Image (cartoon, rainbow, N blue to C red; front, side, top):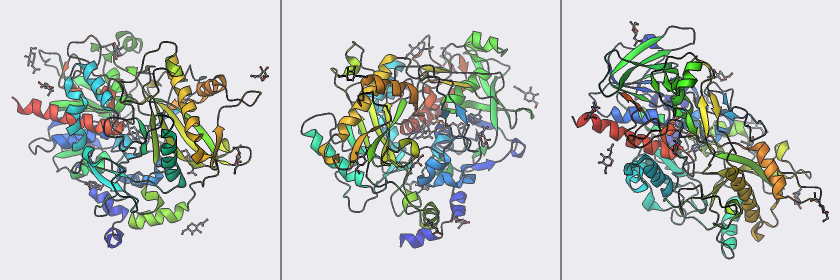
Amino acid sequence: MFLARLGFLSLLSLVQLALGAVQFQSPDDLPGIEYDFIVVGGGNAGAVVASRLGENQDYKILVIEAGLSDAEVPDSRVPGLSHNFAVTGNRADWNYTTTPQVHVNGKVTPYLRGLMLGGCSSHNEMMYTRGSRDDYDRWAAVTGDNNLSWSKMFPYILKAETWSGPNDPNLPEDGHYDPSVHGRSGNVNVSAAYYAHPLNDLWVAATKELSKSSDEFPPLLDMNGGRMIGMGRTSVTTSWDQDTIGHGVRSSSVTAYLAHTSDNVHVLLNTRVTRVVPSTDNHPNGTDIRSVEFATTSEGPRYNLTATKELIISGGVINSPQILLNSGIGPREELEALGITLLIDNPSVGKNFSDQPAVPIGFSTNLPIDEFNKTAALVEWNTSHTGRLAVPPHMAPLGWVRFPPTAAPFKDGSSDPTGGQNSPHVELFFRNVTLIPAWQTPKGNASILMLIVDGNPMSRGSITLATSSPFDAPLIDPNFLAAPIDTAILLEGVRSAQRLFSAQTFSSSVFGLVGPAPDANGTLTDESITDYIKHVTQPNIHGVASCSMAPHGADWGVVDPEFKVRGTAGLRIVDASVLPFVPSGHTQAPTYAIAEWASDVIKSSWTKN
Ligand SMILES: Cc1cc2nc3c(=O)[nH]c(=O)nc-3n(C[C@H](O)[C@H](O)[C@H](O)COP(=O)(O)OP(=O)(O)OC[C@H]3O[C@@H](n4cnc5c(N)ncnc54)[C@H](O)[C@@H]3O)c2cc1C
Ligand SMILES: *[C@@H]1O[C@H](CO)[C@@H](O)[C@H](O)[C@H]1NC(C)=O
Ligand SMILES: *[C@@H]1O[C@H](CO)[C@@H](O)[C@H](O)[C@H]1NC(C)=O
Ligand SMILES: *[C@@H]1O[C@H](CO)[C@@H](O)[C@H](O)[C@H]1NC(C)=O
Ligand SMILES: *[C@@H]1O[C@H](CO)[C@@H](O)[C@H](O)[C@H]1NC(C)=O
Ligand SMILES: *[C@@H]1O[C@H](CO)[C@@H](O)[C@H](O)[C@H]1NC(C)=O
Ligand SMILES: *[C@@H]1O[C@H](CO)[C@@H](O)[C@H](O)[C@H]1NC(C)=O
Ligand SMILES: *[C@@H]1O[C@H](CO)[C@@H](O)[C@H](O)[C@H]1NC(C)=O
Ligand SMILES: *[C@@H]1O[C@H](CO)[C@@H](O)[C@H](O)[C@H]1NC(C)=O
Ligand SMILES: *[C@@H]1O[C@H](CO)[C@@H](O)[C@H](O)[C@H]1NC(C)=O
Ligand SMILES: *[C@@H]1O[C@H](CO)[C@@H](O)[C@H](O)[C@H]1NC(C)=O
Ligand SMILES: *[C@@H]1O[C@H](CO)[C@@H](O)[C@H](O)[C@H]1NC(C)=O
């Protein structure tokens, strides 16, 4: 029955669904009306803020998005294609790279960012992890605003979520997640959709086996309940409720929010905001900034518009600081060196940039590789939103390991970099079972391709301008491994993965570590693994903190707890860039939550008067 229902749903009708908000392809098409709010960037957070503000039918809202409509990127709807199209050199990506990483042998890596409506939520890997309660409580402590604590944010986390159960009809929902921590009436479709693979069952058996002798790998019923330590199954932002049209389709901030707004929300596509601009009559409380300047090409005409109420920048962790810097809001010396007129001297803009370092490793295996006929699978997905492409490309198991205080990284007296006892030190992420040459063992075995992720890095980097042109890419420096403890934690993470696969359960299916070179005696020493880490570490692309929130009146930070840019009136930033620390997990769920909270803050500031 559900096949019959989905059968007539072509890509075309999905495209039409995405037209709740009114879209304009060029500035010349705009209707010439006044807008109460202008949102810069229709990404993960920006789409939420625009939609929530648009619930007040009296408000007119304009979203200005640099990229194209996600509807023109059909692959963005297909969960199983995220690896294929979320690559640099894609017309829906900003094609950024990091600066040469001085502590990673000068390595330069792509730094993917969505350049389309929905931003990264339209091309990310759909993992849904909220982080630990400690992450939120630390944000609250650092910003002096208890509203960011886990217990205060929890209603906003739920407000963004509609959970639908596991995709495996043989599994009861009980025992695979905790219903009490999930939202059932929110916007974003979340489910436990993953593909069947023998590793799923071996993983459960290994967890049980190892738990008898060690507390390193406890089974974890639900990693989204605030305590994020143990072995569980991934949740992702797709629906598995067969009665919804979202079944087997990526749920993005467009499908989940913008598609459901009324025509008081307008979206201008293909248009880059170059600067925010003060109005001539300065507000007594600061520089009144409610105007935006924008353009479609670097040489083309500049347009401008003024919001009658507020401007909200939601350009993401790279572009929000870039827009401020281009506008003259940032460190005085940096701006003067580029000949940009200083508007507000704020040394924190673009500083404190933090991302999780990730180390790719493999384990030699005779488990089956994830092979399927992509042509046939795409036809099936296109017809019924079922099959291998209806689920994300990564595997179901997901592990979070917290090391004891006696573990190697802390032997030198280093303090715990996490927010607290409910937070893991490393994530064990399972991509797929692969036969790509770099991961083939001498006997031609496949590898279980993994990422070992340091979820709470101590290193801090920066976003700075390379030139004074808003059309040039900024310099993206996560400064990986600058703090020695980050390397020590990654090393212990690799050791942890080895301990996991040493379980008897895996004795006939998973063999040695692939990646680091053994020494002359065939031993994988700490030195050889450390050397490997210092050559291969790459971004987990969960950047935050380049426009960090700080307490009211603090002498650092970019926004205050009401998301207002320090020293201005009329200007806020709402996106992942305001989070002062990266959450222990992945960033999209916290981004939805913080955008929901910010929307309430903005709305209430205009209804109180
Ligand atoms: C490939 C990839 C995989 C990921 N996988 C996961 C995952 O599995 N799970 C998870 O939780 N997180 C994942 N993340 C991270 C997560 O998606 C992001 O942290 C989060 O979506 C960021 O949201 P944001 O609103 O801050 O920024 P974005 O979603 O990047 O939104 C910024 C928007 O602003 C637009 N913009 C920028 N500059 C301008 C300008 N000057 N003018 C107009 N518009 C502008 C951009 O085009 C974009 O649409 C992944 C990220 C990537 C890139
Ligand atoms: C990224 O590369 C693709 C392919 O070359 C291109 O179409 C796209 O415009 C580039 N993005 C940017 C922001 O330059
Ligand atoms: C945050 O919480 C405090 C105390 O609960 C409240 O008084 C304040 O108004 C809240 N902040 C915002 C922006 O709503
Ligand atoms: C799920 O996805 C569909 C399609 O993207 C969307 O319309 C719907 O609002 C989402 N949420 C629910 C609860 O179905
Ligand atoms: C301006 O500042 C004063 C004093 O700090 C404050 O009471 C008032 O609410 C502020 N007004 C606006 C519009 O921010
Ligand atoms: C906006 O553009 C108009 C003309 O198009 C110009 O007169 C005005 O000075 C501009 N304002 C700003 C703030 O750039
Ligand atoms: C970076 O963040 C810390 C708080 O985590 C703060 O003390 C420091 O001043 C910030 N640095 C800058 C340059 O903003
Ligand atoms: C390859 O797999 C076989 C089992 O099929 C195993 O005995 C062997 O150790 C593996 N080789 C390597 C280099 O891991
Ligand atoms: C893949 O599927 C397509 C469409 O069904 C078919 O034409 C093709 O022969 C298949 N390829 C292989 C290698 O089986
Ligand atoms: C998907 O369906 C649409 C409309 O039904 C069709 O135009 C398109 O060719 C199909 N694509 C594939 C890969 O089957
Ligand atoms: C496994 O993932 C890697 C990295 O994303 C990708 O290059 C490779 O094609 C994937 N392999 C399979 C068999 O899907
Ligand atoms: C290899 O083992 C021998 C004998 O135990 C030892 O002398 C030598 O230092 C070892 N080589 C390396 C590279 O560890």
